[in-house]
Image 1: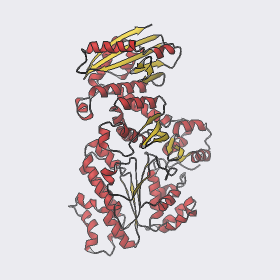
Image 2 (image 1 turned 90 degrees about the horizontal axis):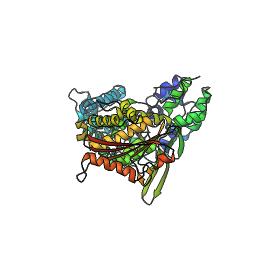
Image 3 (image 1 turned 90 degrees about the vertical axis):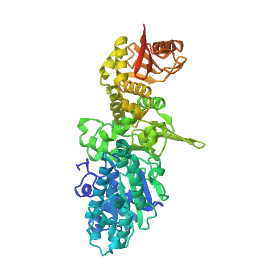
Image 4 (image 1 turned 135 degrees about the vertical axis):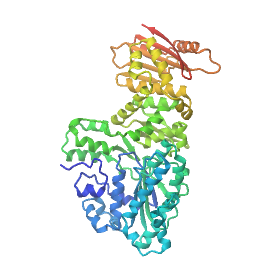
Length: 562
């Protein structure tokens, strides 16, 4: 049985060392046949972007044309008309996947090192018969007094030199272009990084007469006005587009063959429920390749959430922490297994993420692989998508992230909050909730991330949802009785007669005193008959909670119905 290339994204190594390889070589044909000179192909992490870019490099590279030819002997591209392009082009291949520095200066130094490493591996340029003027772009980089401006024109200048040396247009491959941009947003130097990347990429992809094809991969489609302004020849092929739909990730047929080749006999429906569920373009059964090969490597361990990466999840967790009311309703629906109809922003505008704009956050969750598309519909000029969590593996990741929302307090543990609620201990619950409101978010968070009360309230709801969803039905804003309750909880076990209704009210200028507002919340539970759903499910031991909050101050009123 062949080994699986876990953590190996070097195409040449995978083929020469006889690792298991799913043939995606017709990606090369699709790139060549594309009408566009420059292609942006965003895909979720761990979906084979780097391995595919390594394959493109090996195919086109004029320096190692003969050496690399045999790598493709048993692949589909060998039978394609596109084979004539093998080994014909000089290639600039740069990966920014590890540019995750905490300052702009360190990020630029890392990018400088990447460019210098590329030059050091291309002695044919350093030894080429060039004029002093032609040598200036890379001579200036080797100077100890180099600066950022010497990097700005790197791609265009090197393209021109390569064209002169080889008399052939150039392929430019930029892998994980947005890694440094995402990190800059998290670390607070976003504007500087965007300004640099705009100039750097424009040099290679805008009005470059020496460019044959340019391919950029990443996770996000950063807003064109932010970074790709002026690149009129750039074609974007996201997971919503039809092109390249089956070239990243594994199709169902490919997964079945992999499991069969590996001698793994197991319920395919279980494999499907854990790792399938992605929809790219018109391909509705795309599997996460990272998870599949990890599962196939250790099938006796059973199904595990392999698609976990702390640094990648930090961005998502930050966004979930800052969910507003509308987004919180969508998230609770997703966790409940529902398909939620949503409008999304296909391009990522980071200032909209800061503001918690729902369309932008949902778009980011979709393109990162935390959601997938069940359907798309268009009414006049409005396009909406039915979104859902793809599979069990991603549900586990959500659960892990959201559970941590109840762990943010320095004074009260999530177990204390949950125990007080589930044991229907009114005094303990009020005390735990008060401590959570007081200590779960810092004043620094408030200043930079909006309204504290709203943030804490929605974090509390989502945290409860994640902790209780295995054994309880937890519904946010459900229709019940004569209106919509803020939170409704009851056990899935029909023999468990407990139930909870929680109603939250935020103090406004026109509101009565905080304790009176909490009583109003309780009155609303009664007058709107929010217990109707609990009665329908024969829940007879019901705890009613009216909560009022003002900043970090909380007042609770509780009642019990038996």
